[in-house]
Length: 325
Image (tube, rainbow, N blue to C red; front, side, top):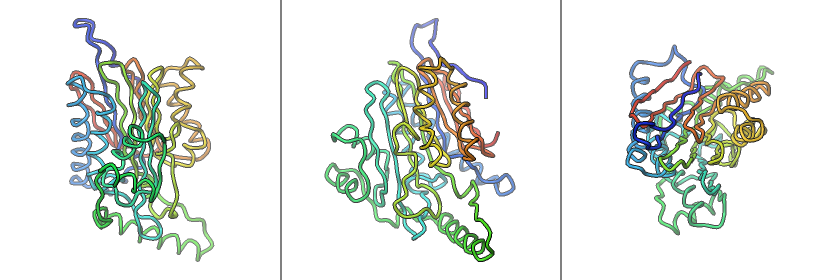
């Protein structure tokens, strides 16, 4: 896509701001996308944009904005994070999240959560209320109880759609093995992450990402989302990024930091750097996408899948929401 710029309002002298979100790459096939499902997904993206935009337009921080946007999607069962998280191979939920402050380079991440209603909020708490960057599993949830982050019964995360997806994937996998054929999970079932990146009026960048992982993933699997520099990255000198897709590939190319490094050391524009990183993912046979915003307000949303739930809004209030290419 063409690089867009938010920049500065030359008439008022006020620095503009911007917010970009994604709800996952590898969208529902066009043939299965009913008008009702599409309407619900677009409405969810709009709500997420509005939550972050309300903060930014009142001169709030980029950190507050990305958390607000991600929390909306974590509470929406149409997205694979929080309430809509997919099931592991043993029928459980294990969620990951991360956040990064571009001003300070501080970051927080969590992995393997089973009871935290909004994993992104716990990731921020790790960043702001602990000396650590990452906490996982029972230790992360013990920390959540200590500081009062909301915990819920695992039943909260159950949705029939995600349960049926697990049954479908496990059946297809068993049939493929029985026939001596390789099993390839579809983008629809493999992908699903939510994320937000923002630039605020003070020129500070932030990124946040949250996911339920992959349908039928092995218990204990951690993807790129909570790996700072892979699925989540922010640096005021360059850009903020949030990724979605085959996490193992985004980890291998250190996707978020690579976009930043290509800008800082290679002199690339945000759009060129982001496209280059997705190109590397493609050459490794990985699929997915990322969203990014730089310190000048340029944005980029490249992906190599059939679609990516995505949207952006600028300081004029102009919103764009899209699903397919």
